Amino acid sequence: MTAPRPSTSPLAALRGLLSRPLASYYLLLASVGLLVAIGLVMVFSATGVDSFEQSGDSFAVVAKQGMWALLGLVGFWLFQRLPVNTYRSVGTALMCVAIPVQLFMLIGGEMAGRLSFAGISVDEKANWLHVGAFQVQPAEFAKLALLLWGAEILVRKRDLLGDLKELTVPLFPVAGVLLALIGYHDLGTMLSLLTIFGALLWIGGVRSRILGLLLVIAVVGVLILIFVGNEYRGARLASFWHPELMKDTDGFQAMQSYYAISNGGWFGVGLGAGSLKWGYLPESANDFIYAVIAEELGVVGCMVVLALFAVLTYAGLRIARRVTDPFRRLAAGAATIWLAGQAILNIGVVIGLVPITGVTLPFISAGGSSLVVSLATVGMLASFARAEPDAAAALHARPPGKWGRILWAPLPPLASAGPSERPGGATRPRQRGGVTTQGRSK
View 1 (tube, rainbow, N blue to C red):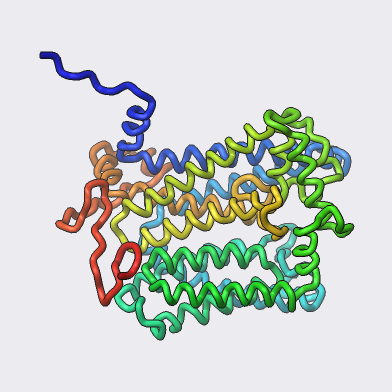
View 2 (view 1 turned 30 degrees about the vertical axis):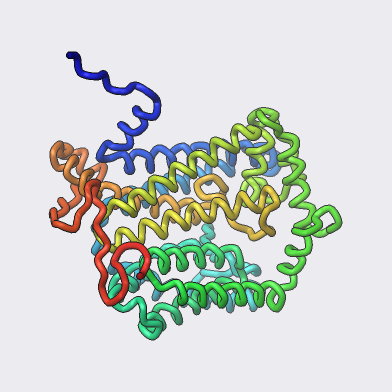
C-alpha cells in the first residue's frame, strides 16, 4: 500500500511556511521592507510637483526621506544586535531624558517659540525641536522610552501586579507626567502613548478592575484636553461631525480626503496622476498620505497596505507569544499594538471614522523622527524573533560566517528546555502572587 501524498493545497503550503523556525523574522522584515518602499514611492508622488515648483528639484523631499530611512536602517541594525539586558537597562535612562525634554518643549511652546538653549530651539506648536539645520520630534522617542521603561517596571513587579499601591510607585505617576506633558500640546501622540501604556498593562496581567479605572481616567483626561485645553481641538471635533459645513482648515482637509478616496475608485487614477495633492489636500505627504494612496492606487492599493500592516501585526504578536522571556513578551506585544494602533488611528482619520489627530502612518508618511524610531523598534522585534527557541536552535545549527555576524546580528542565546515550555517556544503561565506571568490575571 502506497503512503498518502502530502497535501499541496495553498493552505497546507502556508502552514508549512509558518512552521519554519524563522517565519516570524522573515514576515517582519518582508512586511516592513515593503511598507518603507511604498512610503518612499508615495512621498515622491505626493511632493514631486510642489518640490519642483519651490526648489527646482522634484526629489528634494523624497531624498530627505530616503536619508531618514537610511538612518532608520542603521537604528534597525543596531537594535537587532542588542541583548535583552541592554533593553531592560536603557529604558530608565531614556525616560530620565524624555520628561525634561518634554518639559522644555512645553515651556518653549508657551513662549511662542522664543525659548532657545545652546542653539536648540522649540517651534511655536511645541512639536519640533530645532537643532541647527535639523529638526526632531522628541515625542516619537518618548514612545520608545515608555515602552522599554514600562516593560521593565512591570517585569520587576510581576509578583505584585494585583496590588494597586505597587503600581503607583513609580509606574503611574511617571507615566502620567509624561502623558500630560505631551498631551497638552499633542493629543494625537498622547493617544499613541496611551496605547503603549494600556498594552503593557494588559499583556503584563494587570487586573481588569485596575484597567477599567485607568480607562475611565484616560477618557476624562482626553475630554478635558479637548474642551478645556486648546480651542482648535473643539473645532476639530465639530468638523468631524459635519466637515461639509465647516470652513476651517480641518473641515476642508477632511472633505478633500473624501474627494481623493472617491476619485480613486477600485483601481485608482494611476501612480502620480492624483490631482488632490496639488494644493488641495493639506499634509498630503504626512498625515493624509493614505488619501493619496486611495486616489492613485484605489481600493486595491489601500488593501495592499492594510494587508502588510496585518502581516506585521501577526508577526509581532507571534513573536510575543513564542518568546520565553517575560520582558521580551511584554515589549514585543506592546510595540506591535503601538504600531498597529497608530496605523489604525491614521487610516481612521483619513476615511472619516476618527476626528483629525495629526498622527502619521508608520513607515509610509514623510517624517524622519517617526521613521527612525519605528525602524529601530522593528529592529528590537527582529532581535526577539531570533530569540524564539526554535529560531535560536536553527541559527545555532547553521551559524553564519564571520562577515554575516559582523553585518547582521550575533547568535541569540539558546533557550534552556524546561517542563513549563510548550512546543514552539511558548511557556505555560505560572501563577505568582495571584497574577500569571503570561496573559491575564486570575
